[in-house]
Length: 428
Image (cartoon, rainbow, N blue to C red; front, side, top):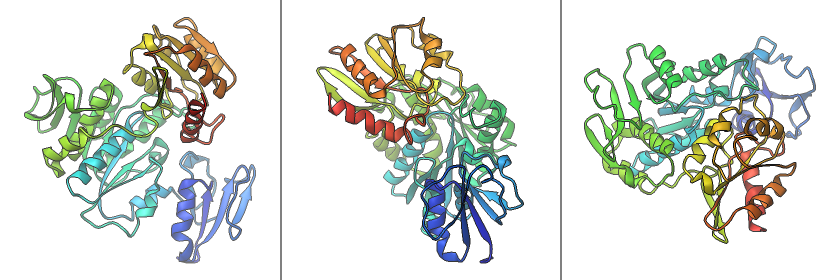
């Protein structure tokens, strides 16, 4: 075992954590990457076009490196898949095109409020492997998983959740069907399924994969009339969230903006309810103001509110964000790295908005989709785009960074873009 060789495809957050966790176990490591990257001096490296021609026994791929691109006979895995297979606590796994970070965080907070040992990791930015050997059997690990991590992995978990499914990451996945198939993997080995039944695509996956297992359906609609089919329902009725026939909490307690966040609360309630008291749910929800970089109010200047929703990397996320604002008083900053998505949905979604300022590598593509829907400004510079928004916005308006795109064209990730946005605002 200790003579085995490990390849690390890429040396980002996940594979750095793999190396730190396994470095003392006697394995030899080779970092493989298309481009040169900084690695510890004791590691072997293979850089260049042949980096996927592997000879190692175990290959930890970076999440966005699809397994079928890797050549060689080694066992292919990811940091998250390896770690989840070696952690024996209770697991709640969350995926979806939108909302998974909010849902994951809210579930963890509800469990913690109830006194449970609850931990959060995965695609949210904290590697799961960091928890190996540290959790008790009765603890909960809430794990956010991306389609990349699920492409060749079906986690064994107590609860599997899909928040919704819309086209995403089509610059990496070979097709939308492949992307949906990856999302469906979260249900294959889950003891209980929780699904947003307002999402037709997610519902289709849940029904296809359920195999007679219990499903918890979550919705912002009143779906409480079907309580005799053996499944569970979390839904809205007369200003309250219900679970089956039990009234859980008033919608007025939810501090998050937007109807989509009501759905996120319903999903979290559906996942956490069997393990916690209703009081713990209520106390958590009424004190939960969201996650960083998701419709986060960062400053107010001259009566203008500046919101950071830099995590919005698809058109559907941007449309959901804008639905929580008065469009006539909203100035939105769009654009970034293109994930081979269609921006056609923005055409109708931006109608009536005060102004859309578009920059980034895909700016022309977005501009072509929305130019006839609203006032638009096309600009080459992110910094200048924020300054243009400052000049356009008036007392009572909101400026919202919601790119509808990834940030990799000019930034390391959305958090780096968020940091730059905040720096520019502070200097206005």
